[in-house]
Amino acid sequence: MSARASNHPYKISDASQMPYYNNSAPGGENGRFHAVENNLDHHYSSPDDGSQRISSSNTQVFEAQYCTLESSSANGVYPAQSSTSSHSISSLSGSPLSQHDSHSDHTYSSPPSASCLTEVADLQIKLKELENAILGPELDITSDSPESFLQANVQLRPDNWRQLLGIDAGDLKQVIIACGKAVADSDVFATELLISELGQLVSVSGDPMQRLGAYMLEGIVARLSSSGSMLYKSLKCKEPTGSELMSYMHLLYEICPFYKFGYMSANGAIAEAIKGENFVHIIDFQIAQGSQWITLIQALAARPGGPPYIRITGIDDSNSAYARGGGLDIVGRRLHSVALSCGLPFEFNAVPAASHEVQLEHLAVRPGEIIAVNFAYQLHHVPDESVSMENHRDRIIRMIKSINPRVVTLVEQESNTNTAPFFPRYMETLNYYTAMFESIDVALPRDDKRRMSAEQHCVARDIVNLIACEGAERVERHELFGKWKARFAMAGFRPYPLSSVVNNTINTLLRSYNSCYSLEERDGVLYLGWKNRVLVVSSAWF
Image 1 (cartoon, helix red, strand yellow):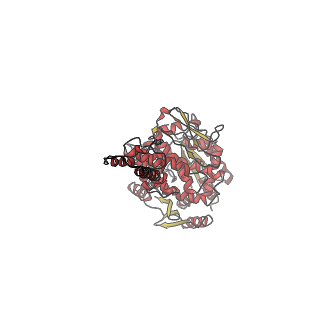
Image 2: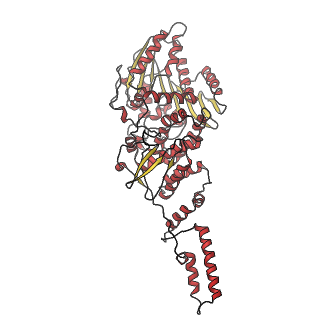
Image 3: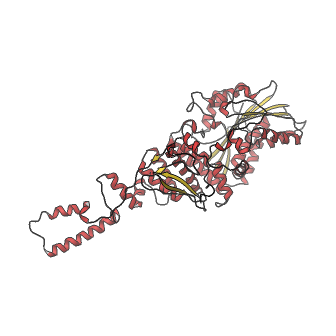
């Protein structure tokens, strides 16, 4: 897709092909998700209560099929190791324990007496009971392989494998961690066991760990079944309509204050920087619905001495185009209507492109205007040198510095998932989203269908992308604030202090949500956290 600056509508050729994660069952399928297994039909079930189950059997094949998958099994599969089946034991003499007893009998030169036979029979019965107690009843060890012995033992004595893996019974977090470690170590047998175990423990209507576990399990199965590109090409489920998806996004915005926190802090920094200016150009690298700017337009319209002339350049790609139900012209009309109602002079410049495609000419900078640039929850989507031969992340920052902005706002999730190898990234995802799901849990009941839909459509896809995808297909690439600070400093930026008035407003907002939220300011940078975990960092630069 070529980027261009335009005031015309931005249209995509086929919105129905947009990658999408959906855990809800398609109509007419009775809540089932079909997977192909050697021409046998296996099911990924999602009962009405929201719980998730994965069935497992011999020669199992995992496929990325969460809804109706429109692809063949050739899209890439992950064959899990077959479980060893147990067979009936016809006689005790076939067991290792009885073989030792048989050899001992050969040391006698004369036939045993009747009493000896009785004692031997009693001993055989006791050995049989002991064998059953250790290995489980009806076990037939048909192979001398230690792995076969372990598989049979694990299958029939489920507590044993938990002990071997250091997992306490009922500890879901330990199972989630062990499953990620098994995947990282390419331990096929342990992976199969743990996926099956997770399928019995997770639920999209459960507690925060159960809900997060459900989506992490989706990511693991997707990772094992195909590459990132195959995953996103195969997830051709029926999407919610634009209005439905918008309602889910709005709900998440209302119940998660750190989204409001980010936009409020960015608006406060911009309002402070353009105070008294008459020609202002705001460049938003992910304008989405344009909702962030409504309150700022209204505030600037009421400014003493009259409102300034505002021009907004809105940059966005096809994902948000679907959520809007159309191109960027919808955003332009919406913001123009708001500005008109307030008596504020307004102009909108649409750039329908992904952030890393933007070039200087698309920004249409004019002499004499004051420039403010907004990177709110967006810059982590721009690939850097670990993904592309061209470091777009640093290129974009340097390009923005070249237009001499009055202020640049940066709002990002405080997480380290950009260049981290799979298992550290897996653990970072677990820890970060545990805090996020806990914060959502205090806002809405666990059986609230709106909450489930918001998590599934607005959060789960990010989690699946973090776990399942690599290379250019992994677009969720967060960095810690220290790394962002170094990138901006190398481009020649200096910190711009945030408004104390805005900080106080955000503090008041947080107190109305839950006492577990915290807000800390350090060196002009705001850190919003949940309990002991920082979730979002907001900063400004010039």
